[in-house]
Image (cartoon, rainbow, N blue to C red; front, side, top):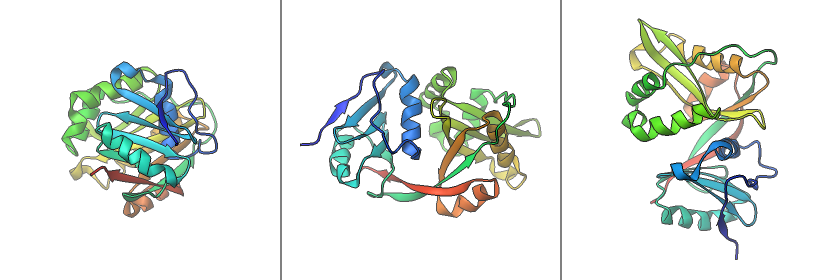
Length: 235
């Protein structure tokens, strides 16, 4: 019977053939820097594929959809509530878009202070302003697995975007938490933050996922549709 087994730090993620999937990039970036003592747990499927649980959230990269029933039961056992998975096994579809950053020397990027980013994102969802979010992102930043950008207006941070999973090994990254304070939308602030990220990572392939109705915004910024991923809740 197929199994889901713990993956020790320093091992190899069994993601052959799926390295370009958004969930695979996230797994590779986090596995490179994460310490199990901080709460992240990595597991591999005996038939290929891997997953990571972090609190009530999980990132899953399946080799085939037939692995999902076992994975879902395992996530429920682990106390996971929300998941992101690479194959259509349930949940809401999220469009994945990608861009290749232009080659050349990297532009210096002095990202905004983490405290300001957390405070701004908390306007969107209070979970982003909590100690867990702050501690996790601080760890990623210290170990080169994340990069933040922001845009200011009227003397304060009003928009932010970040590569929250950065994998120098494959020269790929996943952009997340693109947010602009409500009254400052329509001024190009988020677009400026995205441009800063691209300039700081020449030659990288950057991915992001969004609701279908938001895809046109990112396509205008130079991203092209490339795949889908699915976000769901464990009942």
